[in-house]
Length: 62
Image (cartoon, rainbow, N blue to C red; front, side, top):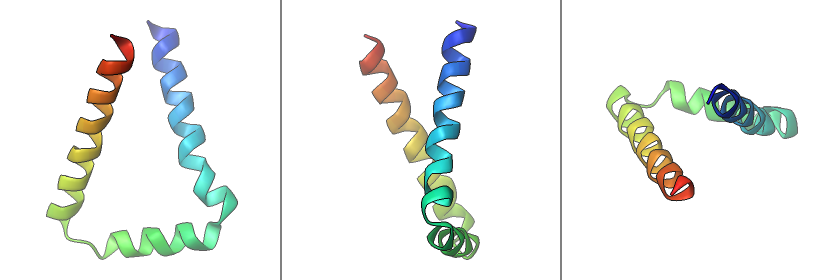
C-alpha cells in the first residue's frame, strides 16, 4: 500500500513540475491570475478536480 501512495505522490510531483520547467513565464502568469481569483471559485474548482480524480481512480482500480 505504501508503494502505491508514494508512487502516486511521485507522479503528482512529475506532473506538477511539467509546466514550470517547460514554460516558466506561462506558469508565473497563471499563478498570478490565480491569486486574483475569488476564494469560492478556487475552492469549488479544487473540489471538482478532487472529485473527478477520485471517480477516475475508482474506475481504474475496479
